[in-house]
Length: 175
Image 1: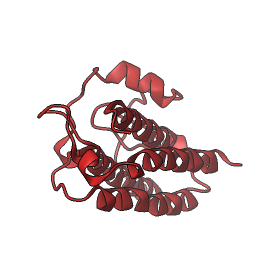
Image 2: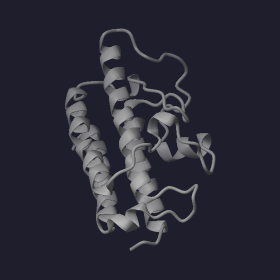
Image 3: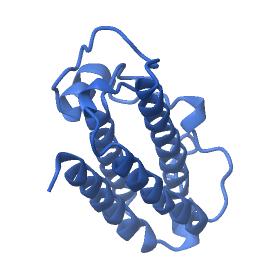
């Protein structure tokens, strides 16, 4: 199995774990918030959709720009070769403020957001096919909190981010 196949499988597995937890919830449970400023499982799922949608779009954009000879980012690769967990430890605070583009803002049924979230595996798979012969460490798409990440780190981030929010859903204690 190639590195890219493994990364894709890792994201798919994280997605399945997350979906498994959220599918157990009733609509009422999915919208419950432990406090007014906390996120519900629906909010978390909507956030995952917007964040991953933007991340995948950004990876596609970075790939095409690099291939065209006009990379979207150039500079020192301050996280070169590091796993995403180390990068997060070095760059994130305990509770981060979500960038507005990735914030939940529409609400609605959790089933819709879960379906939308799950639908993102296909464009990610298509990207991995397009990247088959690419040097993953040479294609850089900066993260708004962590800075310049290469495509390998970006795939790792998707897995990490999904698992992080799965734990938050589980900590709501709804199931």
